[in-house]
Length: 199
Image 1 (cartoon, rainbow, N blue to C red):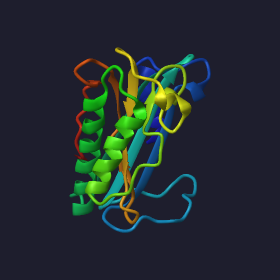
Image 2: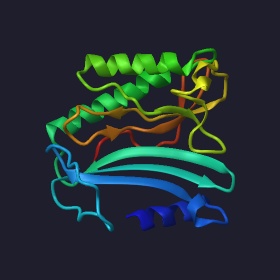
Image 3: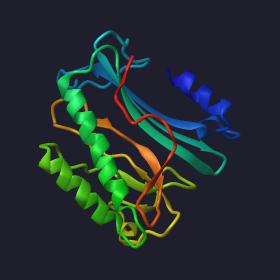
Image 4: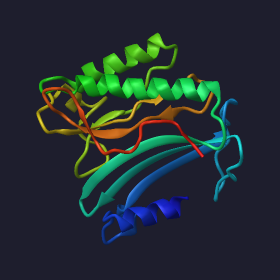
């Protein structure tokens, strides 16, 4: 799967002189609806079977630039009720953050809104850097949980919003996309469906 994704990235213009610049990929699979496994995955990974969920995060880059980010979840078969609820929460958390991406706002204030929402739904607060700039590196300023989170956003900044939803039991999941800051809120860059995808 990783090789196919990396090949797709090359075919659409991503990549640099070093293959490591083409894409940063993160794939996790597990049986959907059951507690997440604690064991470290062993290369080349587990066999995906009926009833599994696969979570993918993809950061595509080329020579000295990061071009895009996408995170989605897939189920092989009907998704569990836990996964459905977690996905809707992740998508809503991203929408809350996007609506707040206006010039002058601070990333820490956007993060507070997201974490208050996660609290209200009974999920854990997201301790990850789920809000960050997009440019020369994967995590470019302004960056959450970094001094630059105090930097007021400016029009046309590109910010990745990738909140992770976790209940502390099941495999966490993420809805991630890149947005541009506008006076009306964050405008999503890309048209990939924001839905839990059943295979």
